[in-house]
Image (cartoon, rainbow, N blue to C red):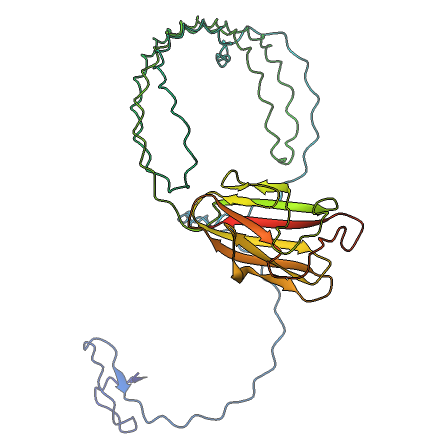
Length: 396
């Protein structure tokens, strides 16, 4: 700011001893003359003096009068709700008031559920069964021919049509539903007793358990079941469909077992005599067999009824060195010879035999031309009768 100087000389000119930068007072002429001088150059700041000691605290002044209450300021925003504190202990229970007199009867309770359906009435009598249609006459049975070879299974004939189904009898009417039972009376509600003096409010206790559900009213009696309608008559049995045509017999299959038989001897007492060269071994006892295709012709000869191929096994215990051969229709089958030179083993043979005529005869023989009659050893190797076997299987 400008430095302000008063000049009591009423001279509007600056004095020489004043600052040369003084200017007249810009006020009106009637104002006392004041000279304003422009400030000079600011000198450097002096060094800061030491801070004096803090003076003692002065006595507290008297309390001033209370000022007027200011206007109420605007309501601030509501702060967030604090967390709920823990539930305090339950206050002591006040004494129970006396039970008041019984009040007027309350409104009728809701109707109970409908009771279960009663037992079903007795079933009506079953209608008469219609008559069975007449059975057709049976044709005459032809003579049984010889058993042919097992062929492939022919095609199955068509199944005859199914006879018509009898009409279904009418269903009886459903009986009416019985009436609903009357609702039982509800007990009277007593009047409300006088209100006791209000005790001190205790801390809020925990929420109590839900009260028990009131009893359900009695279920009314079940109405009677309606009578069951009569069962309709069973319709007549439809006629039996015609029998389909029998398929043609298939061609004879190949391979597999077509017939079989086992013939055997026990020594002793079978084959008690020695078997001379050119003589057949006896197999006088019958084992398992499939029927008449392979049959006995005598104690030592056997019939192969069909023309075909047969697999033949034999085993015989003998006491001497010797040989055995198969014969077919009295002729030796040279490729079937089996024998042993010494020792006490059995003579065992097996071969495939083909027949060219029906009812061919097969035997096991001590070949002609051999010098030794063969002893069929009794109880060979032990105390029991030993067996000799001839097994014949037709495979084609």
